[in-house]
Length: 313
Image 1 (tube, rainbow, N blue to C red):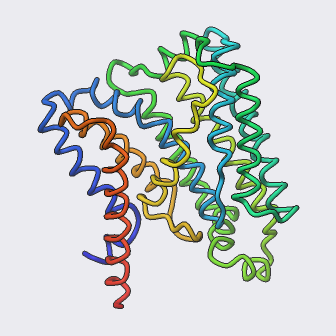
Image 2 (cartoon, rainbow, N blue to C red):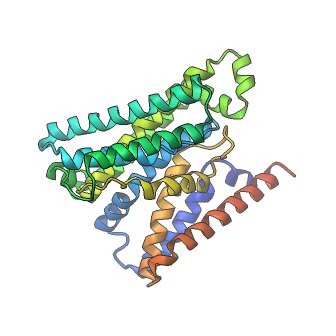
């Protein structure tokens, strides 16, 4: 039993179910389709952002440009709204392009110029935040109605669209794990020197990792814009630290080489559900960060203990 808990996202799923049980006791309608859709809509921007951050962390890196990419995507969609499903598709592709471009810059700085990821992505984040402020210097604008309504709606009044986005991301990750890139990503995170000696093109893998992460941040910016329906040049800033918390809460090692995207998605869901539980309990929002930190520390400590027990140490 202990051995199973040390593998995959089992522990974080147990935490989520426990929190949801508490939430259901406080809110009788917590299991309704509308309540579930609301939870998913609130969680999906952070969950997607954490998924992108996980890719970089697995390769033993850190990506602070997440906040900048999300902010740029948000203000672009709010200042230049394009109506209709065709406009939504074009807006989505624009967000992917913005994220991919920023990711390519990060990858070039880290993989080819050999800059530390935290320093390089911090500089890129500052540049991105400046660009976002140039586009929109204060909160405002309006995201297209099609995006804000349809992307937060439910298909057939049952299936949340945001849930389908998360499911699609999980499928892409499952496929990635079975590719050479997936194996190389874990190899680099575990030991980059050994990976290079085994024939892995570490620079190319790092570049692809940052580009992929950037594109995922673009999706997060798109979904955040759908949820807020307006623009804010600092929209991505609150998600930055929470993305690292979700990654750590999901059990991904911040030293690289161990973990996965699915657990980080559940970790993000736990953080957002905790806000709901605290609000339903009448706890002031000022204490939200405190409780999130406590949950994170407990999860990391328990995960470490279970891992050591499973290894017989």
